[in-house]
Image (cartoon, rainbow, N blue to C red; front, side, top):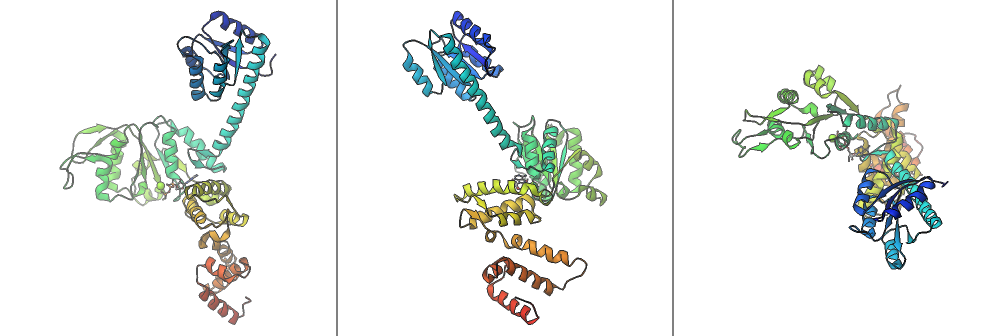
Length: 458
Ligand SMILES: Nc1ncnc2c1ncn2[C@@H]1O[C@H](COP(=O)(O)OP(=O)(O)OP(=O)(O)O)[C@@H](O)[C@H]1O
Ligand SMILES: [Mg+2]
């Protein structure tokens, strides 16, 4: 018995040859499928999963070489062996150049057939395994450009997969910069609607007076500036997905209209009475607590429940710090490539600082910090000094404030503590300390003199 059982497609226009090869290989325990020409072979390849294609070189219709090219293009993990009549070995050599893994000369000897085929089976299996691992490494911690290895993010990925193909409305909540729009996109491109448009609209960015006609469209003459008919974003998103970003900013009057659109699945352009049917999946995103808005009567309760069938909560970055190194690595590579700089990593102390920082602006802020650092970096590695002052200062700042939790410290004392800490951190380098503190050197000297006067210890 062979080491590995192969799935082998045998292609030859001579029935006796097909049968012979099949018998030999089946005897060895392999799964063999037969095709009498190139076209049939391609059809079989589309239906099944083959490790090896064993094909005659000269066939009516499609030549073996043509088939080889097609297989290499459509099924790069499949190995192709070509069988050639004695005397056309040059063509076989040509075939090897085109990507065939081996060739057999007819009349084919049984042992040779077994040896060459099983080697190809083995290689194909190996290659598949390697590719599978590679794909896993690439995708395990990333989902449609969203990176995250934390449990919280893995749960988000899982939820995205589960809601993607349902028609449910989804509400995505989370602080600014946590990736709400990315999630909306991932849901869209993972759903059956992927070939139709994904249309994001930021309700906060469009003046209230324009928002209605932006969303629902208008007809010519509906208002002064309406010089022609215009489709609204709902119609633009037909069969696709509409993301209503910053939904809390939607005026109450439009909330009522939106509710009606969701219920009736049709829109009326401003100035028209004609209803246009729309098939659009609606997602909404918000970084405020919509339930609070409902309580305060700024957001309609009925609309809230319509939109919030499923909520995806994006965790803030400070609650999933294990994702930070992964994100840093990805952003670093992206920024370095974009700016053609040979920045390959960062010092441990710089990374430690990033892991410690509270990230009020979440992933967006981290991305900006890395972009800035790559721009400033002088060497192959990003160092502490390449990080913005607020990030560099964060550690000391928090400590000083934590320590003073049960005793309010005068601002001057906090400043003193802070300056001394930073100075300690720079090993007494006043130039660096001033930079980190975001003040000029003269100011630092003056402050140090004051501290000395009051009995400090610089
Ligand atoms: N998990 C993540 N992996 C990779 N990139 C991310 C991730 N989360 C966010 N980003 C990136 O951070 C930036 C902000 O993301 P996005 O616009 O989706 O956030 P948001 O929650 O919609 O923010 P806002 O509330 O400010 O609109 C984008 O450049 C996005 O690519
Ligand atoms: Mg957004």
